[in-house]
Length: 199
Image 1 (tube, helix red, strand yellow):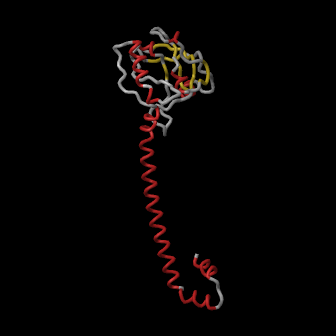
Image 2 (cartoon, helix red, strand yellow; image 1 turned 90 degrees about the horizontal axis):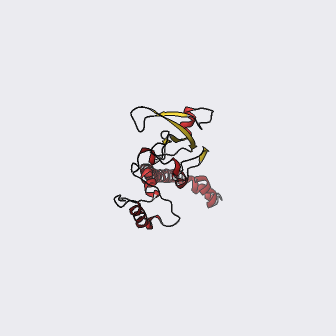
Image 3 (spheres, one colour; image 1 turned 180 degrees about the vertical axis):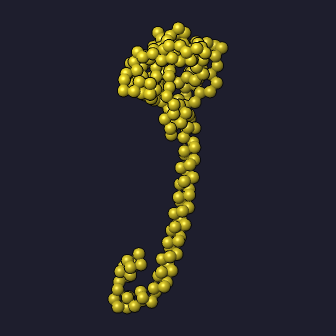
């Protein structure tokens, strides 16, 4: 409950989880827009039934209570797979190993408060690693950034080589036509017109 609000994921239709859904016997799920379109093209997915093997080896019936926008979980460059969301209580409390906390201030000032809040609920649960979302996004973009930097470096080298080659060609051309330019200037051509001719 509250996950989609914290992540800023828009609800397309229906609703998302409440605390009333956060129980072991719940048979309600939220699906993303991609899965809804794949399962029920051109139709509403609300109140439809899907079979899932989540809690048991045998498929169980779940009712779709909401559809949310697609989230990219694996890569920022590709849409990734469709997703089904269940409340943590339906799988047994403690199964979620990552939590998202939204703050309006500096996220790096938050770890002590998060640890204290978790310890107040259950002192045996430890908070191991608190990272700002920018760290996750940065890791997801690392390959792309490296490739862009590499392309930029090679483009810069190519530009330098091109500029040097062009300067050499122009210098050779001017050297070959030096007598012609001298004659033109002797006949009254201005420096600007000769420069324009070279360029």
